[in-house]
Length: 337
Image (cartoon, rainbow, N blue to C red; front, side, top):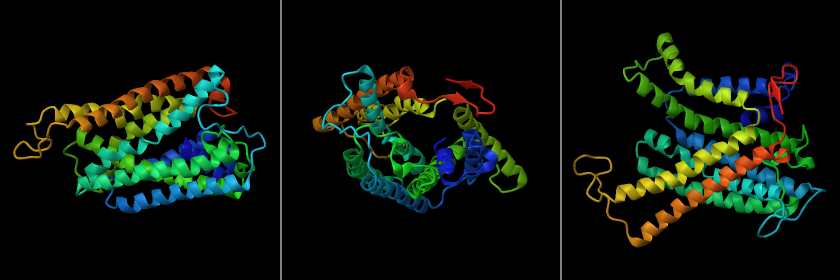
């Protein structure tokens, strides 16, 4: 859906008549084609492209913040939310926390990318770089934009009512281009290993050739997950409500709660090997400081889950926060609320 919105921000296809679903189908077909690559032999180049798009989007937002002003600006507080005296304001503040939690989504790729690497331990450097960039972007871009436009920044930022994001503007198109390329690259990094996993699980004896029969069979193996994602994009009436619940039920669990529990469980068995049945790396018992750190991560994950779930429920409850919701396009509406 985000890719479709970005594509629509770059080019207006008259035949689509402004229908979001047609843009979704166009992007989905392209993404399905990229899934057929089967392997990623040069993730360095893809990671570099992804990094450049992130820097590009960051720079564009900072430039827009200095060039355009928000006439309805409500200055942000250092702590709290200017609308915290209302329940809707509390929910809005929690949705802001959800955005911060969503920043941990790249950690979803840890297992997939490590499985594709010749030296999986090298991924530690990427994780460290990702963490530093996350903090840097939140501080530099976030503080700059909020200082210039106030606390009520749209999610995504293009929903903020300033001239920078008016339809057809150069800044809007440039941001949409970065968003499209970055999301497609992220999709490839995630979907290609997932497609290969499905094939190895369902057809371990698959003849890995490029004959027409093999190509067709591999397409069938990758089809279920693609169809499921496409169905969600078309059938869910509100993308951001879906993202709110998806964040609550996945991000804290995958990036904080489950890793902490697994780490504690593995280190509680000091005489067991991680990867090898004989002579492999063995886990030492955790030192008190290490155990405290892991428990803090577990606690943060649990708090994140509660906050994200409450924010998602609140987003559904308040129409102003939920925004327009519909299934279908203007000339073939299935449901609208």
